[in-house]
Amino acid sequence: MKTPIRVAITGAAGNIGYALAFRIAAGQMFGPDQPVILQMLELPLEKTQQALKGVAMELDDCAFPLLHGMVLTDDPKVAFRDASWCLLVGSKPRGPGMERADLLKDNGKIFISQGQVIDEVAGDDARIVVVGNPCNTNCMIAALQAKRLPRERFTAMVRLDENRAKTQLAQKAGVPVTAIDELYIYGNHSPTMFADFTHAKIDGKPATEVISDREWLETTFLPKIGKRGAEILNARGLSSAASAASALIDHVHDLVTPGKVHSVAVASDGSYDFSEGIWAGMPVRTTTPGSYEIVRSYEMSDFAKAKIKITNDELLGERETVKELIGSLLPLFPRVTYRGRTSPASRGRVSSSCRACPSSRCLYSSPSRR
Ligand SMILES: NC(=O)c1ccc[n+]([C@@H]2O[C@H](COP(=O)([O-])OP(=O)(O)OC[C@H]3O[C@@H](n4cnc5c(N)ncnc54)[C@H](O)[C@@H]3O)[C@@H](O)[C@H]2O)c1
Image (cartoon, rainbow, N blue to C red; front, side, top):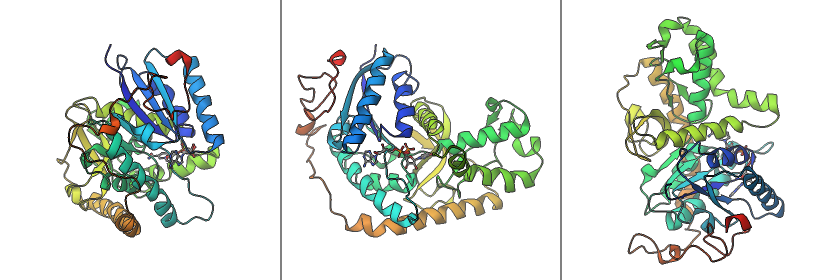
């Protein structure tokens, strides 16, 4: 059996968190021989901490063989300490009448502080995935805080859009979803994203040959993927949760599986004419577990370039909105000077009371996990 890895989940008692934790503990993210310790962060409110306790009790009741420990906390330093994966799901939802710019600024503050703490206490091998919206820009904000961890370690999730797009094409063509290949998402996780049907394959043939109705592809398929989240919200009265959790399982699973090519929002290096320094969805190939290279080989048509420009402009607008915030905020947590591999603060981390828990501030201590 491998050594357990620590996986931090923020917003673990939320809708996505509830759908996610059980699948990680069941081995669907890291494989059937990789034990995990879940380090779950929630807001310091009695109600949310109680709900988090309930999630942990249910996880206990599943008796997952791979779940080697749980840490429940309201302290980001506890949640991220020594984590190999930091899954940033928790964020403030957009309230009634709230402007998108206000949401960007409010959530930006969360990702500034979490980015700083992650850089300070997470494992040397840490990888960070941002799901909380607006996830591309939140990811950029968190990555900008990092002095120790390279920015390539910070990715945002556009995999839900890829999965949605694959299903829509498969249903239109009357084929199983496994027949769809090379369908990647470019740009923002928002209605402006471009699901590139122009390079997609269906059973190895160009999707545009199998589905010759170009008008459907441009005017029905693309907007449907862009507005799918709103469609689900209208139908369910709640936003997508199980499908988002499933997409996060896919995102990380494929990032730890060399050879996989999949859609990930990464720091732009100018590929596909995205502006440098924004986080944009594009195809990446996993090289070694947790590392990847951008797949730059797709030639874009004028149509595709125009779509990419729209989503790039939106991302630039988001960066502009938070520019002041990033520029003016002082670090919210003191920095640790790293002389060796880890800070002194992150050594001696297993408390005597709970083998999974790095801190006496852990709010949960299951006798079964001591
Ligand atoms: N990228 C995607 O594809 C995608 C898809 C669906 C949803 N989302 C986003 O994921 C986020 C979570 O969605 P949800 O349905 O689980 O929402 P939710 O409101 O049900 O849960 C969010 C949880 O996060 C917690 N939280 C808020 N701020 C926190 C903080 N600073 N630290 C720790 N926890 C915090 C809340 O207490 C809550 O329990 C939202 O921003 C949503 O828009 C992204």
